[in-house]
Amino acid sequence: MTFSVRGGLCAAALALIVAAGGAGPAHADGGGRADGGDRADGSGGGPAAWSVAPSSGGGTRPAKDGRPSFYAEGTPGAVLQDTLSVTNPGPKPRTITLRGADARNTGSGAFSVTPAKGTPKDTGAWISFAKRQVKVPPRTRAEVPFSVTVPTNAMPGDHPGAIVASGGGRTVGVRVDLRVEGPTLSALTVERVDVDTDAGSISYDLVNRGNTVLTPKLAVHADGVLGARLDRPARTLPVELLPGRRVSLTEPWPDAPAFDSVDVELTVTAAGGARDTATGAARFVPWGAVAGGGALLLAVVGGALHVVRRRGRRRAEEPETGDGGEQAGATRELARAGTGDER
Image 1 (cartoon, helix red, strand yellow):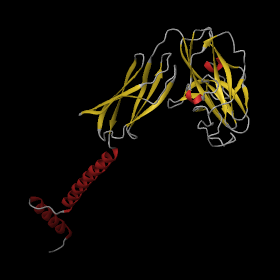
Image 2: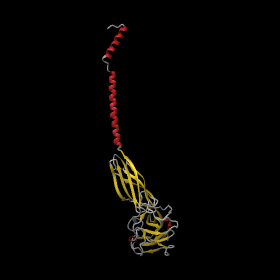
Image 3: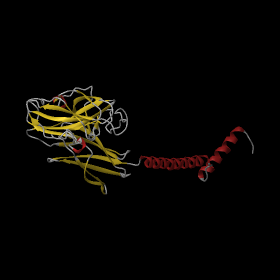
Image 4: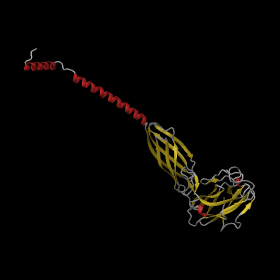
């Protein structure tokens, strides 16, 4: 998208144009659907669902043949303008409500937007529509002008957001990628590396320390006592990390060693020279086998002690022989003599 820098909205606040086809794919927001799953009347499932997309220009060209999202660049203080197409291919009129939203990351790093009950503070707050509520007749496409007013104190770098449309029980949106001109910095850190020896996985955090949107790559290496245990080359993660955001991710390790002491190293990179490395350590011990071996050792030691004790008792009960036996016999003879007993 190339927004033009102007002082306000277009003079024509809203234009209704007969659509030649449906709009391209839209992105769900919250509980809404983005698969066009409405009925033929625009209220349920089927191909006749209403849709939104960046205007492709020309009025009769299907929006699906145009841009997948909005893109704009501007200096602080600029007013940028473009047009959103809202298409209703169904036989009944549709009333669609529009709003601006800030972008954010889900816990897994996916692209998401602020909910309707939230208050946008970035790009979503800078978007203004010619009309926030649009009534679109059957089989018609409405072209809705809007503007993005960049604050004079806006920070340079990427400010992703979205235009969100709601109506008929569904909510969809179109992404808005805004870059404010000025110095940019690509910076990325990997933190809190932890090896779960029970689950066989490596968890870690990624933090975007710069002011550009990053798509990171991850390489994993682990060394054990006897050599390398894991060596995964860099691959692109399914993450679009927004500026200032932190996400927690997990790297599966299903073939982790059963018995070893390992040092794990994670290396992350991204466009613009972003790079960081972090390490973690873990000891893999088969505690079940260790416990079984300990029980067997205790049993062996206990049995040996029992044998030794039994032998000691038997020796104590046996009569003494040799000089000791003769002395005992003489003692018995003296005892009988003292009592007057005769043999």
